[in-house]
Image (tube, rainbow, N blue to C red; front, side, top):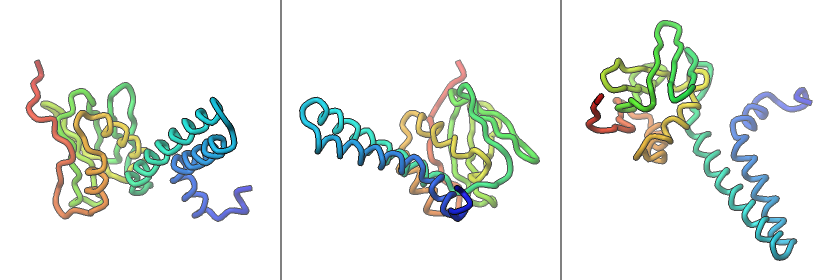
Length: 171
C-alpha cells in the first residue's frame, strides 16, 4: 500500500499523526453527539472534547519537532534524560534540572539542560528521539509551552533561557 503514496505525504501524515487522530476522534464524537439522544449524546460530546484536546496536544508536539537525522540519540527513562552523541553525551536527572536553554548559535541548534552542580548537557534539536524532550519540558513546574514553542520558531540569534528553576539547593 505504501508504494501508492509518496514518501513525503507518508512523512507528513506520520508527523501529524496525533493531531489527525484527534480530528478523527472529535469528528466521530460530534457525529455521535448530533445523531444520538440522552446518555449516548453526552458520551459523543465527551469524545469530541477529548478529541479536541488531543488535536491541541498534537499540534504542539508537531511544532516542537524541528527535524530529524541529527547527530546522536535521546533517551528518557525513569526521569533521566540521556543523550548519546557521536562525540559527547551524558545524562541529566529531571528532578535536579536547574535550567533549560535554547542555543541557536550551534549548527544544529541545541537544547542545553543544566542540572544543579553538574555539567550542561547539549542536545541537538534534530537528534534522534529529540521529540521526547517535549514531554520532559512540559512536566517542568512553571514552564509555558506556548512561549517555548514561539521561541523555538522565532530562530533567535543568541541563547535564550526557556525555563529556570531559580535558586535550588542540593540539601
